Amino acid sequence: MAIVFFVRSKNANILRPPLSSIAGSTVDQAPNKITFFEWLTPLVASGKKTITIRDESESHYVPGTRVDVHTLEKDEYVCQIDIVSVEKIGFDDINEEHAAQEFIPLEELKPLIREIYPNDQDFYVITYTLVA
Ligand SMILES: CC(=O)Nc1ccn([C@H]2C[C@H](O)[C@@H](CO)O2)c(=O)n1
Image (cartoon, rainbow, N blue to C red):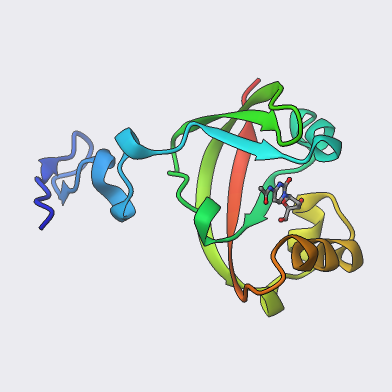
C-alpha cells in the first residue's frame, strides 16, 4: 500500500501531493535515459522532433524530469531533453499533428511504428523539449 503525504503549496492555499508522487511514477524512479534510432537523433538534437511514440514498456518517463538521449545502435550520447508529458493514445488516433511533431510524414510514421511494435494497439506520446 502506498502512503502519499500532502504538502501545502506556496502559491495557493490548496493541498497537492508532492511532485515526487504524481501519476504513480516517482521522480526518484524516473528513467534518466532514452534511446532513439541513430538516423532520428539529428532531428531530436536540432529541436525539430518534439515527440516520440512508444509502447507501454517505454512509457514510464516522468513530466518535469531531464533525460539523456543516446543512439540505440551505439549507445552514443546525443543531447538532453526535458519530459513535458506522457499521454496514452490508440494507434488509430495517431494523426497529422503527431506526424508534424515527429517530423516524419504520417504515411511513413504509422508503418514505422507498426514495424517496431507489430502487435500493439495502445501507445504513449512522450512530449519533450530540447535542453539548450
Ligand atoms: C527500442 C525502441 O523501440 N526504440 C525506438 C522506438 C521508436 N523510435 C522512434 C521512431 C519514431 O520516430 C517514433 C515512433 O515510435 O519513435 C525510436 O527512435 N526508437
